[in-house]
Length: 116
Image 1 (spheres, rainbow, N blue to C red):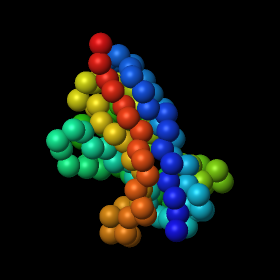
Image 2: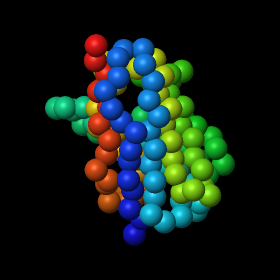
Image 3: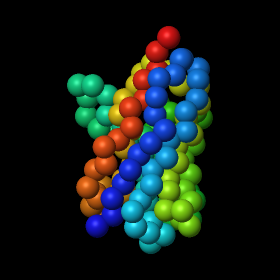
Image 4: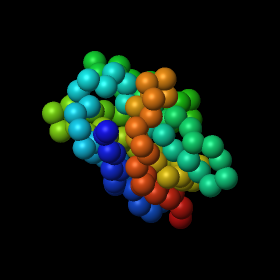
């Protein structure tokens, strides 16, 4: 069973940037779609971005043009570069594969707080 460990979150001012990392305990090479999700207080978890094994990406409208997802299969790591951060991006961020493949156990996530 793959275990996921997210890191890279923190407190940042509006307009700032962060780069999140998701390290998997096993190989992600065979996993077609990996994604980043986020959950804000009092809200349901939402899908933010996905990337296929071949590098095709897709983004939620709310982050399009500001976030970039990437993956390094050799390092079993998925990244999320977040630029032009807004207060509404504040949430706990998680990575996992797409829902229809069945989720791995969720990691602890990494907290992102955007505030002045």
